[in-house]
Image (cartoon, rainbow, N blue to C red; front, side, top):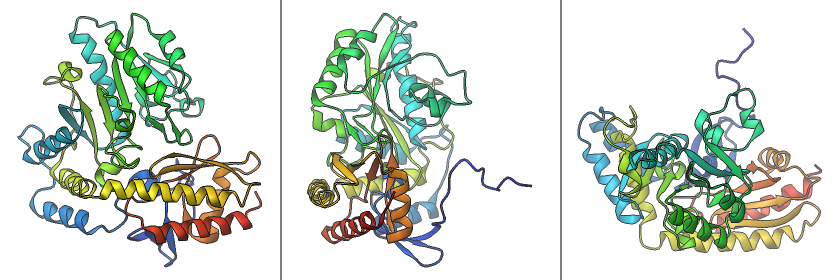
Length: 394
């Protein structure tokens, strides 16, 4: 047998973590890595966080899973907290970001279906987006690489340029159900939406009775300095998909919606066997306890500004390899020069100086540290990054 026991769909490297310690990962050989990847924006409280561990342990000893056929005091409590903290009136819990986006798409289409417009199915999405790996979410992204071998794609999606509100407006017709957009594109290269773009989408949605659906799977849960990134644009969406950091490393996602947007989501229209299980709810409560603690989001903002400034100063010393820094809060990207490929550099850093980051589109290196980093970790990161840049030959 030549195939590996783990289906070989990931290009797994030789780094094999077996333990976590705050903002560090430890390999099976004992090597320590400064983790500024955070499981791709998942481990927002770092590794082995006392509050998260305690919550999971205590709940595991009581009840881990129960069918959604029964009442859920744990789910009701976490949903209420999210409603109180956000634009939303109701929440559906999932196990992942792709599931949250799937729920968001279904919610948007059902809104029009029960409103007497079942023909309104088309969702306008944007180039360089990433929404997940299910059939619906790869169909929602205009990516030949993700489409390859999985055709026919699901119908009902139209694509246009990110940050081009005029192009989005031009695609609206009688079959349009809404927009699906990341306020900050993650896989696409840490590309924040412009204020004008987000404001215009909100206006277009309101004028045409469309659903404004935001994918905040990567940029949400405090990563940009607010609970959700859209808060910094001063807009109110109809539906938001959340995951990654919301569970701090435990599989958890959520689809949040207004009462209006969720008018079609009635008994029998959606479900999830594991979604909203008591163990996941305990993890979500612990994460919310942390990020809503006094000063936590102010700390994220301060560390984000400090990290951006440090990166900008550092890349000025390596003009042959780096172009610029972009992003929001602790969701930053370093744009590499065309002749230096970001994925190769990320690999070089990991093996050469024990520094973890993530490659992204547009030849960008993503910098996604745990939200609990301190000044000393930023200093260590920049020093190691500079050393790797000195040694990297491309």
